[in-house]
Image (cartoon, rainbow, N blue to C red; front, side, top):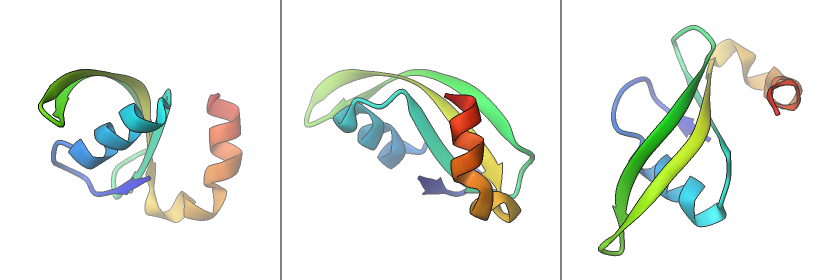
Length: 73
Protein backbone atom coordinates (compact mmCIF):
# COMPACT_ATOMS: atom_id res chain seq x y z
CA UNK A 1 0.00 0.00 0.00
CA UNK A 2 1.11 3.51 -0.65
CA UNK A 3 -0.52 6.77 0.41
CA UNK A 4 -0.32 9.88 -1.71
CA UNK A 5 -1.67 11.57 -4.81
CA UNK A 6 1.38 12.58 -6.81
CA UNK A 7 4.97 11.56 -7.22
CA UNK A 8 6.82 8.63 -8.70
CA UNK A 9 5.78 5.99 -6.12
CA UNK A 10 9.32 4.58 -6.30
CA UNK A 11 9.05 2.81 -2.94
CA UNK A 12 5.88 1.08 -4.14
CA UNK A 13 7.61 0.07 -7.38
CA UNK A 14 10.57 -1.37 -5.46
CA UNK A 15 8.22 -3.29 -3.15
CA UNK A 16 6.26 -4.74 -6.08
CA UNK A 17 9.47 -5.88 -7.82
CA UNK A 18 11.03 -7.39 -4.68
CA UNK A 19 7.84 -9.28 -3.74
CA UNK A 20 7.05 -10.22 -7.37
CA UNK A 21 3.52 -8.83 -7.15
CA UNK A 22 1.16 -8.10 -10.02
CA UNK A 23 -1.06 -5.69 -8.09
CA UNK A 24 -0.31 -2.55 -6.06
CA UNK A 25 -2.65 -0.47 -3.90
CA UNK A 26 -2.61 3.17 -2.88
CA UNK A 27 -5.07 5.44 -1.14
CA UNK A 28 -5.48 9.05 -2.18
CA UNK A 29 -8.11 11.77 -2.53
CA UNK A 30 -8.87 11.06 -6.19
CA UNK A 31 -11.60 8.90 -7.74
CA UNK A 32 -11.14 5.09 -7.82
CA UNK A 33 -9.03 3.87 -10.72
CA UNK A 34 -6.90 1.02 -12.03
CA UNK A 35 -3.77 1.89 -13.98
CA UNK A 36 -1.38 -0.42 -15.81
CA UNK A 37 2.18 0.43 -14.69
CA UNK A 38 4.87 -0.50 -17.21
CA UNK A 39 8.13 1.09 -16.13
CA UNK A 40 11.79 0.53 -15.29
CA UNK A 41 13.58 1.52 -12.09
CA UNK A 42 17.05 1.11 -10.66
CA UNK A 43 17.35 -1.16 -7.62
CA UNK A 44 20.86 -1.64 -6.24
CA UNK A 45 22.34 -0.19 -9.45
CA UNK A 46 20.43 -2.72 -11.61
CA UNK A 47 17.66 -1.75 -13.96
CA UNK A 48 14.50 -3.72 -13.17
CA UNK A 49 11.25 -3.89 -15.15
CA UNK A 50 8.12 -2.93 -13.24
CA UNK A 51 4.81 -4.28 -14.58
CA UNK A 52 1.71 -4.32 -12.39
CA UNK A 53 -1.80 -2.97 -12.02
CA UNK A 54 -2.06 -0.04 -9.62
CA UNK A 55 -5.39 0.23 -7.83
CA UNK A 56 -6.02 3.74 -6.49
CA UNK A 57 -8.82 4.13 -3.97
CA UNK A 58 -10.14 7.21 -2.19
CA UNK A 59 -9.62 7.37 1.53
CA UNK A 60 -13.28 6.72 2.33
CA UNK A 61 -12.92 3.17 0.91
CA UNK A 62 -10.12 2.07 3.28
CA UNK A 63 -12.46 -0.22 5.20
CA UNK A 64 -13.64 -1.89 1.96
CA UNK A 65 -10.27 -2.46 0.25
CA UNK A 66 -10.16 -6.25 0.76
CA UNK A 67 -13.55 -6.75 -0.89
CA UNK A 68 -12.58 -4.44 -3.75
CA UNK A 69 -9.25 -6.17 -4.37
CA UNK A 70 -10.95 -9.58 -4.44
CA UNK A 71 -13.10 -8.31 -7.31
CA UNK A 72 -10.10 -6.83 -9.16
CA UNK A 73 -8.00 -10.02 -9.13
